[in-house]
Image (cartoon, rainbow, N blue to C red; front, side):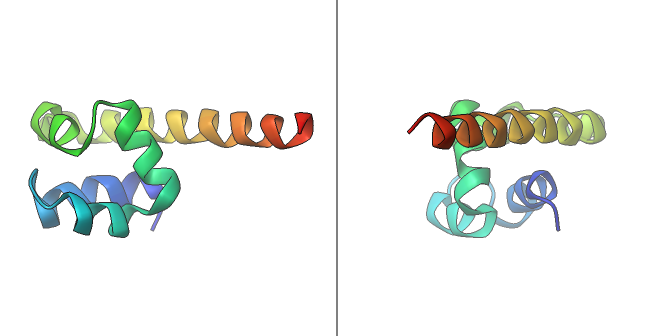
Length: 77
């Protein structure tokens, strides 16, 4: 399962209040994306299920950016 899908699935499984379970489920990179979007509760409350395919695409773009930034940071250090 892709990271973006894990984030969306985590919202369904854990809801807005089981942060620790969600953090473990989505993984380190997924959690960075969650934090960049205001945190777990914020992302849960503000995600409209009608637009879930768009949400996944947006999350995938964010993941790609974070991966690129981390790669560039490793090259610098």
